[in-house]
Length: 425
Image (cartoon, rainbow, N blue to C red; front, side, top):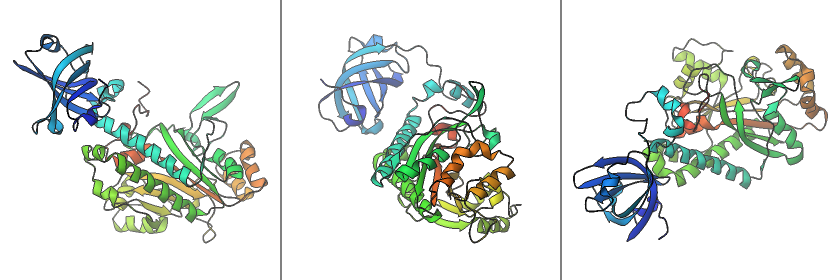
C-alpha cells in the first residue's frame, strides 16, 4: 500500500497507510485516541484495546513517529469530521518527554524554536510564506523580469551606516548587505528589468513587533521607469502574491483566523496620499508631529487603523530619505519616493523610489551625510556611462507575512528569527 497524506485521507474510501508524528495522545481504558500530524494536516486515529500493540502504544508520548494502516470513517465528532480505525501500527521512534507543554513562556519557545516550528499554527504560516514566495516569482517571470543575485558581503552602505554589521575581510572592512539595490541598478543596463529575493541584514537595536536583524528582502529595479511605474509594479507583485496565497492557502489562513474576505477585496490601484497630507492628518488626530519628522509606529497606526487595503505615502522630505532618491522636479525639498503601509497598523511593508541620475546630486548627498563618495566610485560609474531614468523598491517579506497571517509579532513570520537578543537556534 502506498502512503496517503493526511490531508488527502479525509475523502478517501477504504484503507490508508499513514506516516506522521503524534500531536496529542489521549489514553482510555478501552481505546487510545491519537491526533496524528504530517505536513498536510491532522487526523484522529483510534486504537482499540483488542489490538496486540495496544500496550506498546500506551507508552508513547507526544512527537513519537509512527506508521499505521487503517480505514477512514466519517465521524462528525472527530476533528475534520473523520477518523481512522487503526488496523496495524509500527513505532518508528518513541520520543523522549517533549519539553514543550501548555503555557510555556515566549522565551522558552524561542530557545526551543527548532521544536516549536512543528506547531500546527506555525506550519500554516510556513505554507503561506512558501506560496507567497512562489507567487511573486511567478509574477516577475510573467512580466519578463530576470532574477539575479547580488553579493551578501559588500564594501559600502546601502541605507543607514549605524545599522551595518561589519566584519574583517582580509585586512579590510566588509559589511553584511542591507540591500541588493545598488547591484540591481548595475544589472538594469544589461537586463533592464531585474529582481532578487535574498537575505538582508540590519543592525537595528529595535525591540519592536516588526523588526528583525536578518530578513528576506524582495527587491526590483526597472530601467526607463519613473516613480509611477515603480508603484504600479509594487501593486502588481503584491496583488499577485496575495491572490496566489488565497488560491492555495485559504484553509491555512482561515485556521489562522484571518479575515479572508478582506484579503479577497484587495485590488490595485492602492490609495495614495502625500507625506504632507499624512502629516496634516496626524496633526488633526492629535499626534505631536511636524513636517520633516519621520512617521513612526504610532503615526502609522493612526493613518491605517481603519484601512482594509495597503496605502502609499509619497513624496517624503529629502533630508530624511536616502542619498540615491531622485529630487522632485516640483519641489526640491522632496524626493520621488513612496512607502507602502499595510492596513490596520501593521506598518511599512515596501519602500520604493525613482533613483537619482545626476552624479553631482548623489555626490553632494553623500558628502552631506558625512560619507566619502570615493567609496561609491563603482556606483557613480552607473551615472557616467549610459545613465537612464530608473526606479525600484524593496519589500520586507516577513512584514508582509505578518500582515497576511494576522500575527502579533514578526518573529513568527520566519522559522528561525534573528533580532537584537536572539542568535540561536
